[in-house]
Length: 274
Image (cartoon, rainbow, N blue to C red; front, top):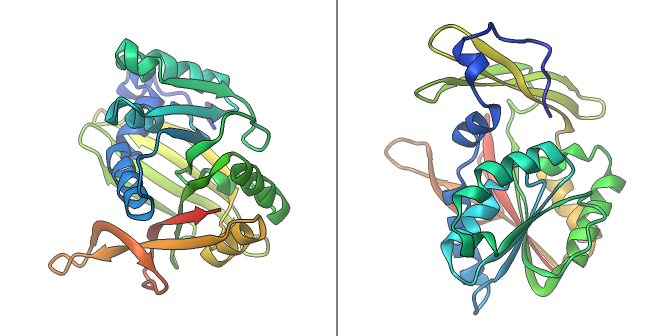
């Protein structure tokens, strides 16, 4: 979601920047994401996956990475925002060769209502499903995911939390040519609804404020697992990141776990099977 109230000065680095390029560079790591999906699928299933559906796909960056990996990989992405889908077509799909482009398509539609061929894999990444603010709304989405999966399909989600997750704060991160700023602008403990913002700052001092804004619910892992099971998923597992012994930071390796660390902030994967 874009908020253009704060317009940067004409000619500044912020005015010339493309927010989607900045987002893909600072937020997404589609190579690591597809690595995890392929490795987890291989450990759970005996034959290769073919069709991947990326819900809330935005610019379809992840779906494009999937079709690049193997000549039998196919993908479709679903998103409500036609303008963002068009940006993805013009920038990400156009970067694929013609044969790869023939194996991917984008659908403008509601992820709770989309009907298409059954997928081996469905993704809901970057906490996109947090946009559902009630249990009924989230359950309805999960039920549609289940209906869209093959019998041996797998649903992959990510989730975040930690004791800093509901705090009002700003977290800057140096991305080289710009600074990414994550802001948790407000949080209501009564209903767990919060507003989060993404800003970008540039070496010339200009800023792209509220490049993206989100009003969502901070869902907890117990809630997510419970609603997935209520929706009909047979098995739901949390994949927790391991810790590098030297740096004491995350090592990028996610494995099934029933115990996690009480960190100030964490990101994990949830893997649900029919």
